[in-house]
Image 1 (tube, rainbow, N blue to C red):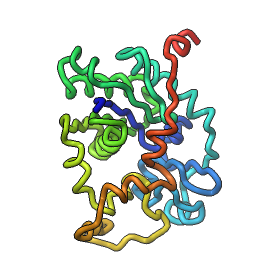
Image 2: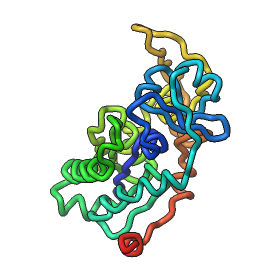
Image 3: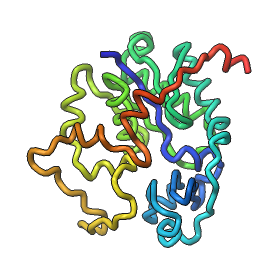
Length: 242
């Protein structure tokens, strides 16, 4: 299976709006599509209704979603990553992938290559990032690489490398509650309180198929269908010339 590196910038619409440094929420159809780090810390989640999001962070600036703005702001990142390969696949602004095998060999392995890609993306965004961080993951196939990139973003941007052939073992132990990390569980549901006031993350019930559940998820953020069917290939020479 093809080795893929995925670059994912959490809450890209709020980064593109230049509002990630303070409390801010980006809405589409009265649902949260992005929020700044300080707003997320107040309990605002992707997919929440406007009313609930404002209850949790009343001081947040409300912004309308602007896909054109998202795309324009992401072009420097696409150009920076394109320096490693002539073609990239963009799922949406803030999320792209490319073939890892050739560049990885050239730059001394997956870990070294992932570090270079992350540094290039961060440099391209510059101060607009406002303290947010990019996630970079390498794995077999688009789906596992996208999950790895999200794990990376949740670990402060340290790249997550899934060894060749280890994708099933990487995905199998993910609990149901981890879908909250992808914006796939019901964001309006009030989580049970666990130790130290953090949401309790239930264990996966015995015998339940995590793989089918993750692949079937898909309302507000991460979706296998989006990865496999909605990617559009960018012709980089034309983009670079624009």
